[in-house]
Every structure is written in C-alpha cells, then in structure tokens.
Image (cartoon, rainbow, N blue to C red; front, side, top):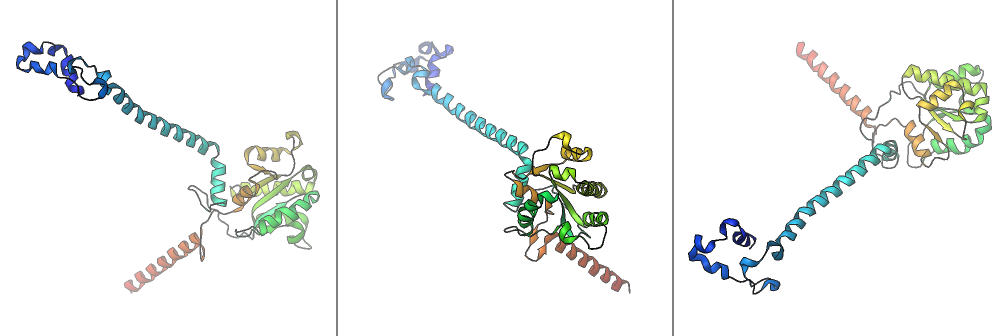
Length: 284
C-alpha cells in the first residue's frame, strides 16, 4: 500500500492519465481499510495517514533502545568489576570456592606454619580469643596452623633466634598493629625480621592487621612504607575474615584426595619415570 501511494505522489507519475492512459481508473480507486480512510481516493492519501512513517520509526527505535540499554549495563558492570575487583576475587574464593585466573601459587616447601602472629601482650586477649580460634578452627575451611610465641617458641633459645626461626618457618607473618605494638622493641624486631623475609622470598609475606586507628606520624618509617604499599585490614572491616583467609590461603584447588596440582605433578613424574625405564629397556 505504501509503494502504491508513493507511485501516485512521484513527480514522474503525476501525469498518469497521459503516460499510461489505459490505467486511468487507478486514480479513482478508493480505500476500503483502514476504517479511518474508508471511502477516500488512494491517490489523495498520504504516507503519514497510512501510518507507515510511525511504524518505520518505531521499528528503528526499538533496536537502538535495546542496544543502548545493553551498552549501559556493560559499562556499569565493567566499572563495578574495576572498582571492586579485589573484593570480587576474595569473595569468589572464600564464599564460592572459585579461583579466578592469574592467581599466584606459592612454593611452601619447608614451611611448618601458615603464619607467625606478631602482637603486643596488651592485644593478647583479642588475638587468643578471636583471631586464633577464627583461623585455626574456621567453619567449612581447612584450618590454618599458626605460630604463637607463648606456645611455639623453643624453650631455652634466645628470643631473637626464636623470632628469626619462627618467621622463616612460616609462609606469612601476621602483624597485629596497635600503639602498644609500636612501643614494643620485640614487636618491632619481629616486624623487621618479617620484612626482611619478604624481601628474601620476593613475595607478600606480611599481612597487616590494625586494631585501632593510627596517625602516620606514629608509625615506624619502614612500617609506614609497608602500609603505603601493602593492603592492610582493620578488625572492624566487614570483609575482615574473608581478606585474612584469602591472604593465608595458597590458592590451590583441592580434589577429594588432596591437592589437585600436587597429584598432577606426581602423575607427571610417574609418567616421566615410566617413559625413561621404557627407553632404557629398549636400549638394552
């Protein structure tokens, strides 16, 4: 119908009676539908009256609106992913047991403890009654093995030597930082030993936990540098346990028999050994 009406309105067809006189009756054809145009000559009807223009606009606008909505949703999703990428990675691991790509595996050979806990005696109540039970007996997760000076230091060994041995035997060192921690020479020694160990191992050995708000001028120079470069967590953080567990975990997927990657490595070595024996027998 649209093409038929445009045929009448085209400049070249205005003289339809002379160009193709045998079809003059076409100009007298009248509309039967729609009802609003019933009885009118088709030659006098406009495209807008037919409703074709409105229909075309609607059909073109619908995909544009849908595309704009999809783009807007993608932009919001990307912004959220960029802004909260650390929290998303942590929650995916701790809540959903999903290890996202590019997670660094740790070489834990020779490490007796998951973490050595360095803290002031003034903070021992929170450490022993909250932190240690929360990590050594976590619900639904493998327990972490912590090194505590009052429990695991070797009797008869110098304190300085005990500190060095405990830090070296632990995958991480948890620093429970408070004003009393900063006033203790032994605590600062434990921090410097752990800081030195992180430089030797070239990894994030330190895990910083703050129990109170501290001004920058109160911090030791090296400790201030660490708090500026490393992520630290306050005990009132809503994701406190998620962040601590994520930092302590070695990011290895487990199967029913233990570490998946350990079993895979063992299988690979077994195949290498079998292949080597086969070559030796063939040579003989």
